[in-house]
Length: 397
Image (cartoon, rainbow, N blue to C red; front, top):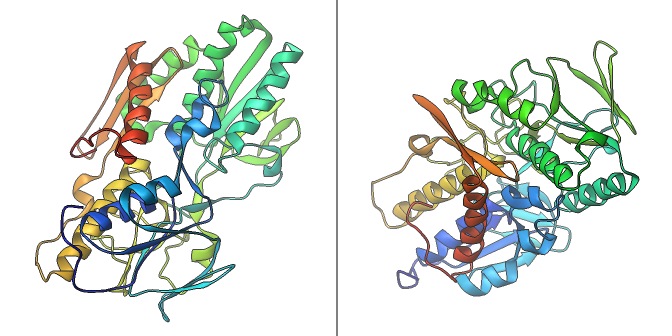
């Protein structure tokens, strides 16, 4: 720890054990505060590299970090409990097994997904962590059979007008990795790979330059596209669109648009139409001086091109804890997460990657054959080992 224990004793609670919650707990410990973290899972799941579980480049354990290890390394307390209620009026978080009172609360419980008819017939690489293993198992069944039709898609949330809760990147990555994997198996000619999305220009949030390159990737990896058709429902072996057309599929992976977490929707927290928590640029919840919301749980406003990503969750963790610490120490300086908003993605394809960056005034894409794949693998190694203090952390990352 960089500082001695803070003399002001406050009960500080972090709700959520993902990117945002873990980084918040780590930062608060660096400032010297005692911290309790609640998570329904006993591990942190590293979503950006989970795309390699279905193609057997990573085992499930490779893309997780035990919270007990993070607790040991950084000194925060962990409670593996499922949250059932957040009450900011009474300063209490209720779980299925206990109640946690707090003086200050950092909400990082993520988001829920928009429900579609028949969505139980799909799997998601951005949903429950265990889905990554299920996708692997279902893909292997098709490989053993020797042929198949695979459909991968994503959608947004009509109630989220700026579409900040759309996750298209992992869908692209998974399809490209599938294509590379099947090529190595010499099965490319035996499989159909299809990509679907209800918007006319999926991926344009990455920027016009990146979007303009997508056709090249689709052709290279032999992927057919179905764009601009709203999804009506999913069946066991198809995707049905609003115009009654049908996309046949033996394995459907779908990343639904995000909406406010069910716990948030039932709470007394201020929310936008999509159910995300209203915050200001300091990550403080509107009308709640002792509550911060970070990561996917929070509404991003004022930047219609922005998107919820893991690195943005960590930016918000940094900003919220900095502002909290300065408030405790009666310092006037504050940070805004708006100043650090940007989209950055190493979009992996199994045999390379594309480095994509978008800011408010520019965007670019750099194809990185071979090297890009190793860059992303390097990031995964860095993320896991720097979190566990096995290697130094690079400032700003």
